[in-house]
Image 1: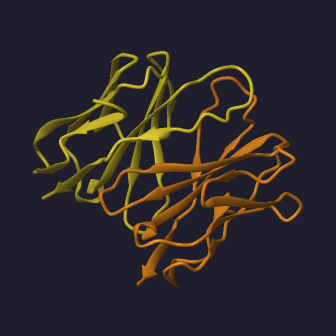
Image 2: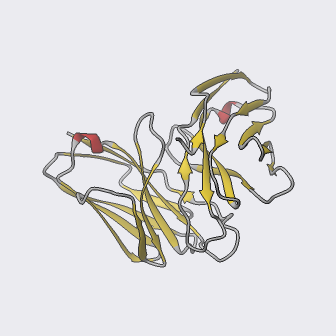
Length: 118
Length: 116
């Protein structure tokens, strides 16, 4: 079974609207971390936001927020007031057993291509 | 320079050539990574170096040979590659420390490799 599932291969959103990118994950660990990355056409993977499994509050970073529903094993990324520069691939990733020193392995989903329409 | 720098950005090589990809991080991190990104597939972790020691080799064919001479530099030596090795190769770095592993990996722009 896939550890990270992103069910939306592509999305088109009108500029200034909010957008939610879905991510579900599969793990038996109690301690894990979830990351979202943005990859523009240039290729660089840009870190956006992080959520730890023990964090009580949903993470927020500027226009990015994470809708973390632990019981449903979902960690959806919400982008408010979308901009043309938000057009890119978005990847959800998970690090399991994240209290284990040296365990830095990230597992990525297949990504969602977001296109913002003017 | 800041961040993670990868050279070259693009590389075209024949199957019998030998080439190397270079990665340099200017973030003071102690771990570095190689990833392979193929079309329509999840990012695949290839190698992990913690404190210059290789801690992960994710069943990568021996035609890929990593080298980490110090905590700031990482190389991927390539020889006798196959057409299916054409992909974007991404380097990343992070700061590994005890406690919650909430430190993100920082990526370079990647090297787009094409095998003829």
